[in-house]
Amino acid sequence: METKQSELKHCSIINFNNYKNEFMPMKYVSEFMHIYEDIKVKISGNYNLDDQLYCKYIKKFFQYYNEIKEVETKNIF
Image 1: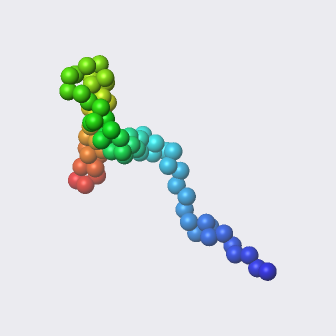
Image 2: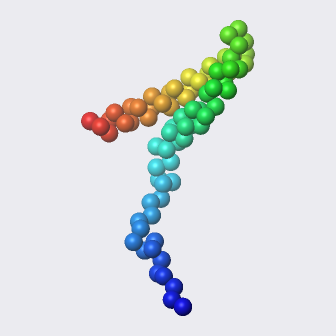
Image 3: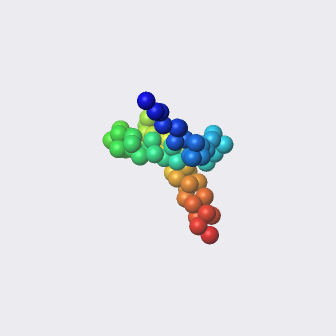
C-alpha cells in the first residue's frame, strides 16, 4: 500500500497572527451585523441607561466600519 506525500508541501502557510490588528475590526463588524437586529429591537426610544449603552455599542461598531473603509480606500489608491 502506498501513501501520498503531503500536499501541504506545495502550499504556503501564512501566520495571520502578524495581521491581528488588521483583522480585528473586520471581525467586530461581522459580529455586529449578526446581532444588530436584536439590539435595534431592544432600544426603547426613551433613551434610558440601556438605550445609551446600546447606542454607545452601535457607535463603536461604526467606528470599526469607518476604519476598515479608510484602509480599503488607501489600498485602492
